[in-house]
Amino acid sequence: MAESRNGKVKPKEIAERAAEQMQELLGRQVEGVTGLEKDGDDWKVTLEVLELERVPTTTDVLGSYEVTLDKDGELTGAQRTRRYARGEAGEG
Image (cartoon, rainbow, N blue to C red; front, side, top):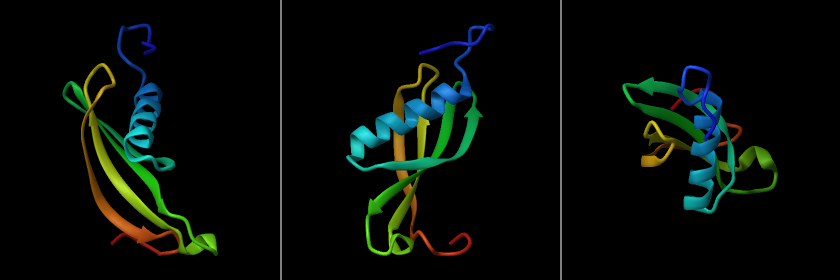
């Protein structure tokens, strides 16, 4: 994993690593990163995952997952926090 000049892992690398590991774990496409937070030595990353593809795509079912990674970028925990239709407005 790439490190910045000060020897710390870059946030972009953490986000990419989280997406890769969750995609591999779930076997589903990660649509994007919606949150990233450093918590001590760990990182909390929120990912949007395509759980069910439908036609039209506005009715796809997405899941929001909060994952934690250690300082080396290894997945240490994951949980789905929300499931919703792509076209759904607002938080819920």
